[in-house]
Image (tube, rainbow, N blue to C red):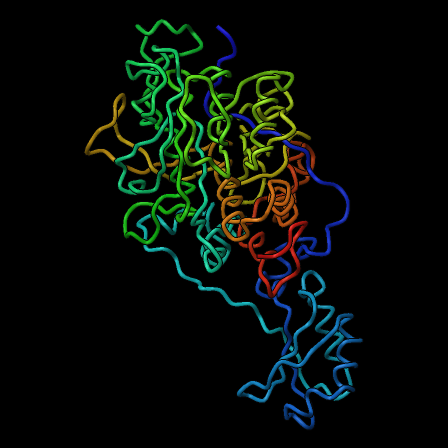
Length: 484
């Protein structure tokens, strides 16, 4: 029969080693110790004991003294209404914020110094379940401290408009009210009629007919009876469900367009169909299938199966997608095992994603781990778009529900990649992967033998707002291809 892939597994990649490059907003030893509002700013407010005029604040002597204390070139900006002088440094305060402020406070003539904190809109979207969507929120809007990805913190820069994300999965519920209008044309690449469950083979209809299994299907003991999962729609909702429409949930990149690519049906699907899905979604040629008119920038694969190596079919498909500029993001797997034994998680050219909990630790009862993992993301209690139909879609049953799994963690990384691509279209896939790894939030301290520090969950927990901030013109310069 060939390799059959089950829902909820996998992902690949190799974490970067060595010091962070100069463009990165430095991470402190424990991210919570230096608030983002402090670490992100490159400005300070100084009150002098004498001569608070603009001319007095901008004298060469004062600028020289401040520059020496800060270890950074300092320029005068303006005088505030309260009489403070605003100065800009040539780098963000980052992890050295407290030390820099203390040094500035010791400069002769300085009466008071404080950071010109970076402020952001601290408003929840008005979607019904917004407050419970901890995985997409930052620490100020969620009870989960700062282990959500703070997608809303990136929205001042971009919501993902202009970017296409392929969800290579079970298809999609086109009529879900939070997904209507959020898609571009996709494709159904399931060739096996029984697996497809829609009465035909490959065609242009990527709607999800349901993936339920019944004993009469004769799919064997590995495929017990199950209700339809609507898995692809749950993934798609995390990425791009409508925001601020006063219903349901919101996606972390609501400006993105989802391209549904159907490769999983009853009990899963064949590797060959998934590999063709990777090729087609990224703009490659697939025999017998029309060309993709809107190739995807980002590919989300919340799927996988057991394999000690990355099959050549996957390796070729992923390499082709990368050559066409697509970022391939895959799940690490849900077996509480080393991701090296699962594919496409063990394919080196993909970005492999483990799952974490609200406390910033590995979801130890299921998430795969190990050196194949590149990054982690929220994967427990993730609420998104579903249908109440146990078999086929219920036309009056468009609902929302919580799922757990690395399948749920993966779209948090895919949407972050999409936000980066929207904010800086010239970024390469390598640039985007670097930014995601190097701007990650540190895992919560965990001395247990089954935690991320011991087993490996990649570079940290993805942080969308921090990754986007690394691209802002007022912040550091960008990797490789430069700032937008």
